[in-house]
Amino acid sequence: MLLEVKDMRVHYGKIEAIKGISLEVAEGEIVTLIGANGAGKTTTLKTISGLRALTSGTVTFDGKDITKMPGHKRVLAGIGQSPEGRGVFPGMTVTENLLMGAYTRSGDLTKDLDEVFELFPRLAERRTQAGGTMSGGEQQMVAIGRALMSKPKVLLLDEPSMGLAPMLVAQIFSIIKEINDRGTTVLLVEQNAQQALQLAHRAYVLETGKVVKSAPAAELLDDPQVRAAYLGGEFGQAESGRS
Amino acid sequence: MSTNTTISHRRNAVGAFIENVRDRWATAPGWQRWTVYILLFVIALLLPSDSIGQFMSPYSDWASVLFFPIGTYVVLAIGLNVVVGQAGLLDLGYVAFFAIGGYTMAMFGTKLGLNFWEILIVGVLLSAVSGVVLGGPTLRLRGDYLAIVTLGFGEIVRQTAENTDSIGGPRGIAGIPHPPSIDGVQIFGVDIFHYGVLDPRPYYYLLVVVATAIIIFVKRWEKSRVGRAWAAIREDEDAAEVMGVPTFKFKLLAFAIGASIGGAMGVVWAGKTISINPNDFLFMLSATILAAVVLGGSGNIPGVILGAFLVAWLPERFRGLSEYRILVFGAALVALMIFRPEGLLPSRRRKAELAEGTGGMGSMGAEVPGPETQAAAEGAAK
Image (cartoon, rainbow over all chains, first blue to last red; front, side, top):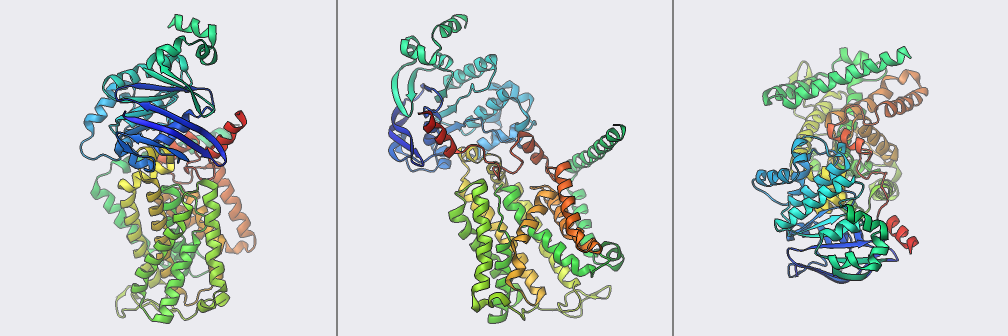
C-alpha cells in the first residue's frame, strides 16, 4: 500500500470530527472519498497532508510511519495537495504559483513547467496573470498544476469541482484521469459523487466521521442506498443517461 | 457630477503616470537603478540643510526632527514591515523590541561601559532572541489572536521596565553614553563624526547609514527564497505548508529579523537621547508605526518609508494648529484609508491580494472560518 490510514481520530477542541477512519490507497489507483457536508472528508485529507494533528491512529506512507511528520516534510516524502478552496496565492502570477509548488526542489524546472502547461493549455496563455484575478476553474487548474510541480507520488485533491460550471468539471475530471494515467496516484475528495465514482477505481463513503461503506467505485454507482443518498435518486439516473 | 468625473479623470491620469513609472523601473537596467539609489542616499544626507528645514519644520529644529521622529519611525516601519507586510503577521507590540534595544544601550553603556558599536551588536542579538522568545509560543496562533498576544508582550516589557528597580524603575536610566566621536572630519562645516549634545546632524547621518544597511539586507531577503516563503505564508498559510514551506520556522525568522531591526533602532536612538524611561515605549508608538506601514503600502519598502515619513512629519509640520493637529492628523489617516485602502504606494502583488479579498494582509484580522468554527458547524450538523 502506498498510503495507509489506520483508525484515525481527529478532534477540533472537544468535538471528535473523525471517529476512527481506516483507508488504503494503492499505487496507481484513483480513490475517492465521498460524503455530505461535515462528513469529515476535508479533515481526513488535511490530516493526511499534515495540516491537522491526529488524536490517535497512524498514517503510513510508502512504508514509513508519517503520523508525527510536519506537513512541509510530507511534501518531500511525496504527498502533494491541492487544498480546499483551491488556496491559490492571489498575489503571485501563474508561473510564480507553479514555482511555489516546486519550493522543495531545485535545479531546472522548465521541463516540469512545460508539462503543466501542456496539461492545462489555458494556464500557458495566462502565465503572467495574478492568481487572485483568475476565474474559479482557472484557479483550480493552478492549484492542481502547482501540486504536480512537487512531483508527488500521491496527489490529494480536495473538491476540485467545487463552484465550477459543469463543462469545466468534466474538463478537470478528464485531466485528473490523464494525471493518473501518467502514473500519479490520486486521492480525491468530492461532493460530486456521480462524477467522482465514474472516475475512481475505489471509493469510501463517509458519514459524520466514519467510513460507512467501501467498495469498487462502479459497484457504488449501482448501490441503491448510495444512489438515494448521494446521487439524487432518479434525477441522478437522468444525469448519467445524459453524460 | 461633472466635478466628480474630472476628479476621477485626474486620479486616473495620476494612476496611469505612476503605473508608467513603475513599468519603467521594473525594466530599468542595473546602472540606472544604482544611480537612483545613490542619488537618494545623497539627498537623504543633504536633507538636514537649513533651507529645507525652514519649510519642512518651522516650529522645531529640523535636524532633530529628522532624527526623531522621522528617521526613527522610518527604520521602525521598515522593521515592522518585515513582520506585517512581508510575512503577514499582525504585531501590535513592536515597540517592545525598540525598548529592548534602548535598554540594552542604556544598561551596557552605563553599567559595563561598553562602547556604542559593541552594544549595537549585543542589542541586535538580544532583540532577535527576544523576538524568538515571543514568537516561539505565540506564532502557533493566527490573525487576531496573534495580535492580542503581541499587544500583551509590548505591555509586559514596558511594565517590567517600570517595576524593576535595577534598571531604574519608572525614572529610567540617565547618563547614557554617546557613540565614540572621531573629531576633525569636517564637511561643509559639520563635524560629521562628532557625537555631542549640541549638533543632531552627526546622529542623523549615522541613522541614514544604519537605515541604508537595513534596507539593503531587507531587500535581499525579500528577493530570496526566504522572501518567497514569506509571501506564500502571507497569502495562504496552509497552502504554503503543503508546498513544503516550513511555515513556523519562517514566521519565527520574520519575527527575529523584525525584532533585531527594532532593537538596532533602539540602540541608535538611546545613543543620542542621554536618558530613557519606560514612558518612551508606550503602545501608541506601536500603533503609530503600524499606521505608517499600512498607510504607506504594507509590503512595499518605498511605500513604507513614505508612510513613516508622513506619519512622523505631519504632526511636526502642523504644530501651529496646537491641540487640533492630532485631530487633523486622524482625519487625514481616515481619508487616506477611504481613498487608498491599499496604501499610498502599494506593491503590485498587494493589489492583487486585495482584489482577492484577503485585505492584503494575509490572515491579519480577517480570519475566515478556521478549523474551530468549522468543527462547531460539523458538531451542529450532528
